[in-house]
Image (cartoon, rainbow, N blue to C red; front, side):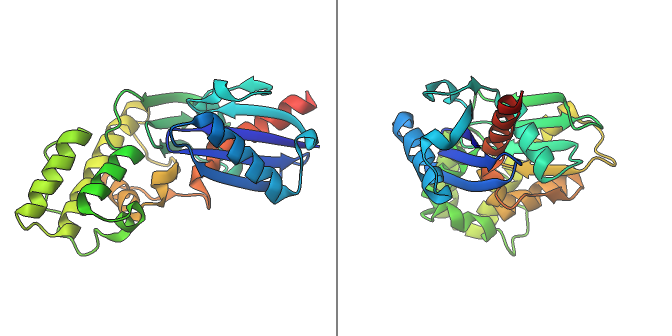
Length: 262
């Protein structure tokens, strides 16, 4: 049999299917859009199609993310903290601090020596510094969000944004462009602003990172500029799994496997 984990976020709906040995057999990431029920169905269907499976082949389903209770036929709905912890410990064993920046929220999780969650901090009341924030900045710069990743190259790093509020920051970016500021300087300022916000959360759960391996998950982990800025502020390297946006769904799938075997 197989086991399915699904992570319903504000920007994407991610599904991972594992077999009885915990090996990943397929993944699917689809935009959530305005109708998360439809996104859930599309994500599940795509993952099943890729694996050559049908619903009857799935023994257990665990959901996570803000829309986790919208999943029909779920065995359990589990918090993002638990699922991201489970997923990152499978992909990068020994991780002691995980930074996850999603579409609508960001979180930092500290693990003990056994890989269990010891503490966490979460920002779910404001979209500043999240995927939504970066999407808005990309619109202001009139570029695709994927282009932001390396647009900071060659910047002096002297430009600082005065606001992290998405609305005010977007207006500020438009004003900077009108004033002739170089795009790479603006993007560098954005990257450092996001990193500074995350650093505050990191320091809350792990005041001293000495000897603590740090990893990053979530769609923003694909943005090299943000990763570089965060590494510089934290004075540490950050490990990133091959598919950072499916870490939560993987953790949910592994929990589904455990529940099937219980």
